[in-house]
Length: 226
Image 1 (tube, rainbow, N blue to C red):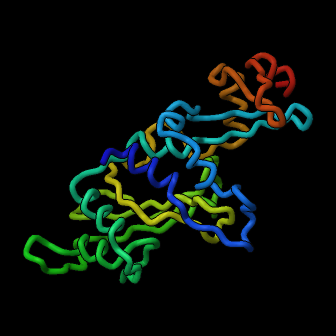
Image 2: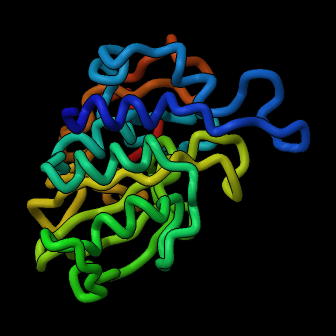
């Protein structure tokens, strides 16, 4: 399965609902995403800039779909791991990672002779984008791994309403570079955004309160008095 198909499947994965969460009837991310086709995600903007003209603020949103489908690959190891994830029900993997089944984790540690080696997989770090600065349209949780000295990443997408729960099962991707996306930054501070605007890299901005209203680069600069 191609990277785009795996990411789309994750974005539309039903991660459940609870009457105590803040999702209401249909406000959870998986409920919003299931109404979209993969073409809808492909056609959405990689970066959405919204201008709040009253408070003179610019808000940036990065499409998780585009962020994850630029630089990640699915190789044979990923294919088998993700298949086991889809077919397993035992989530007691003996590892400091989340959303991983015992069967899938044991597969990563097993050599061609059926022997399990702890050194085959090295866990580098675990992360959750909710805990730092992020412009991503949805929260990502995961872990950087090395498998046979090559770089991989385990990823979960938050499809729920509240950040504490509602994450997809983890899926494995291969990384050819040291970053998930080679030019789309996960976060930009206000100074960087203003520089991009004044240098002409941002052409159109959407009104923060009315998505049907647009601002040109020049109009936004005048409103912000840059």
